[in-house]
Length: 191
Image 1: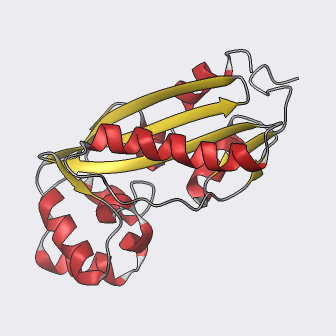
Image 2 (image 1 turned 90 degrees about the vertical axis):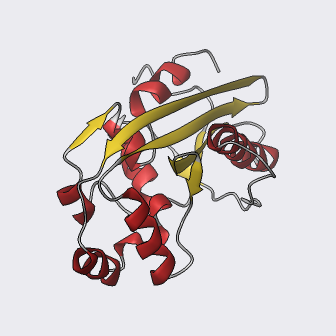
């Protein structure tokens, strides 16, 4: 028996295949139910608060449909100089984001919410990611691969963008989309 496995059914409230893969690494039995929530940032909302709010809202939306379950909600944001870089709207937006990240450090924050009918646990994890300088033709070629399309900050550390990331400070799985060590600590709480 996996000590992290809750006694109740476990649901991941996320459409992200990367989160599914990461959660599976913990050896847990779970189902996926996608939460449909409004992800518009509130005025003057800092990225850490925004990320935590969305993780909780995703989990609450699914818990309302499955009150007998333990639900994991998560959200990941990329911020540079306090500017929130969400998923790019198009190729030009992806290229703009990559130019912002080129040659400098930025922060990736993932919030995790573990909810059941009688428990609410939340945590955030932030990792500093360092990008090498990207040339314009490299940005154009990377955007043309389509990989940046549905990724916060317009890159995937586990994909082709790894070639421009010489260093991170913090949890690698956090940058992919689910901080496994932090989540394991939450799941060890009685649910």
